[in-house]
Image 1 (cartoon, helix red, strand yellow):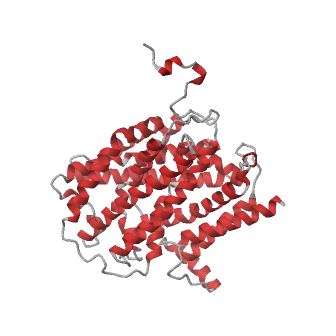
Image 2 (tube, one colour):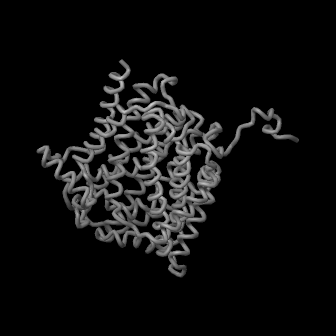
Image 3 (tube, helix red, strand yellow):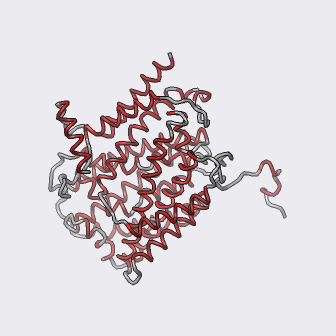
Length: 449
């Protein structure tokens, strides 16, 4: 007997893997559940545990400034807003079939899209390296019989293999990994809520929006890569729903678990994994999280390769994937985790206003006319959209310049010169998104006339 696929004519068969270059069309093969599993797994990260303290708005000395309960609410609000933004970023890829950085040709012009592309490559290499370090450190918590470099190399090898077959990896997540992660989450929730928790309301709510911005920044870190995956989505609605809901729900679940664990270790982020490993079957279920973390490094590495293709469209993504896998492995061997909270703040300040410009122009401006959204290699420069992006970036820095010492001092000086004092109700992410979006609409209408 012949299968249904074999009965179809050759030209009607659908390719089920990403083409090697950008010269070939993207296959539309990912359904809603494939995408939901992908985004849902990205929402459950070891960084949600080890980085849970960031939503407690830590001061320069690393001490939390708001209560655990305030942090949980701030995280939920920031994640929900970030999920909606992620959903918005997912739609253009599904509609056009183009990856994220190629879409920026329509927003900024072909040549001007190279600047954010380079920034995206840099941040993705940083994230990929960061993930390998996290995987290695967590694996040593499980069993320190293997040297750290051994875990780094193993994680790098797994990442590279997944990256060479990206759509196959997405299906693998849906079929096997998602179920194991869900079981592990339920187990740890049951274990942790049985422990004698301290007063979760001890502390203030003063830095609520700083904590919300920290959670939103984690969601936003996926915005500049969303279209790399949703360009393979079958429908725009499925792409939006899977990204917005699938990611938000699991990130909230993971962060609450991380904050509960943080409460059990009296806020000591260095001991955040102790409540997990101390459970009777904790090592087994925690190993699920460690293995699953490879999908984070996979997504970072694959999107780095696709971003490079915006600069070199005929480059073979397989060659790029292998080279990038080696690069982040080497970097993870020689580097250590730096200022995580500061890194998140800088990412948010760059990509939140960029999304504001993209959403405004794509859904309300030139993007409504598909012929006007030029993603060719000769797309004309649009300096007005760069100006709108810059306006949003400045607003973000004025409200929340982050914790990187010299950078913070620079923007503190600018605030003093402008006699501007940020208020506690101000969200750097929301304000920069709105300012950039409104500026893009106004500039778009003026240049159209």
